[in-house]
Amino acid sequence: MDVMEAARQLEASGRDVVHMEVGQPGTPAPKTATDRLMAEIATGAPMGYTVALGLPELRRGVAQLYRNRHGIDLNPDRVIVTPGSSGAFILAFLALFDAGDQVAMATPSYPAYKNILRALDIAPVGVSSSIESGFQPDLAQLPENPGFQGLLVASPANPTGTMLSDDQLKGVAQWSAATDVSLISDEIYHGLSYESPAKSALEVTDDVIVVNSFAKYFSMTGWRIGWMVVPESMIRRVENLAQNFFICSSHASQVAAMGALEGTEELEGHRAVYARNRKQLMDALPGLGFTDIAPPDGAFYIYAKLPDLGEDSPEFCRRLLQDGGVATTTGLDFDDLHGHQTLRFSFARTEAEIAEGIRRLSEFMQKG
Image (cartoon, rainbow, N blue to C red; front, top):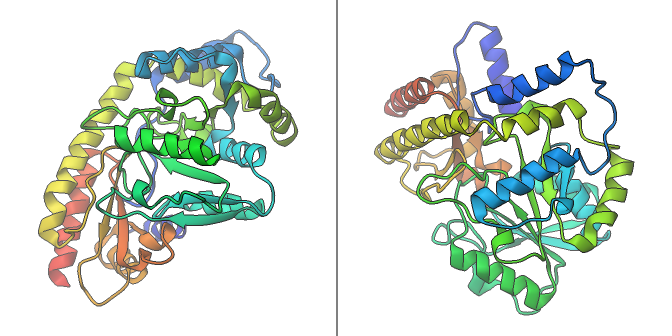
């Protein structure tokens, strides 16, 4: 957010900035989403409170998505519509854990996980990962007698774009069941994968809370609409929490989301752009000195180690923005220990913007 604000100030002064810092699609919500909402508004129907769990039609639509993508026969009752994935994480953490509990995750990871947990007096802890494991949890290092109560995995992950392999996903689910550790799977980048489709944790276990969102694949970040899938035994508990924390998710956004589920053709066009952007960056970065990269399987990020320039990531990102006109994100957002050596490139913009970002980055690196 600080980088975005600095970029905004530069733009306000007349500078042009290529945005490779923010995890936000450069595309609008699909036309099927806006058409569905406008048609609903035209009827004069009030946009009032909905039931806390979400509009039944939307929950059925999400369940159908799992049938289409993953071959899962999902009971729509298990689908809970939330105010973005952030609302889902709050509900999941409150439903599963008590103050003083610990929740583990691989590092680097999305910083809001830790911040939400700490706000709820739950302690985030790191588990071993490496570039060799795609910065996903190293199964061989997961303890037989863990001192933590939860494990959070993300596939594809932010900031790395890496996915759990089939064996990793099965191994994590089996380990979680054997150790009685609650499993949460962040799947908000599902739909955005490039070599093979992402697997859902629901394909290997029902004893999991899955979090997803209309933000990324569906290009609806600002609509603040997401969902979670919970075990049947947890539906009522999460419903009670949702009623008190949020009353319901935005009615208008829920209507638009129902339309978005029908926008596959347009959305696959977006994904094709991201695939070409990914190739542009993966072809260019090694030649510019960014050689330590776990190739991103999905999402729209590349997480790279800095070349040895004698400066840390925040200073490099500051100079790249000020002198090169390219906004990127320091790795310290995602890794307190090693993030000063890394940064994240987002390729969620147009092909022309990414090409221009690469040109500017090359020019900046040549100047030193």
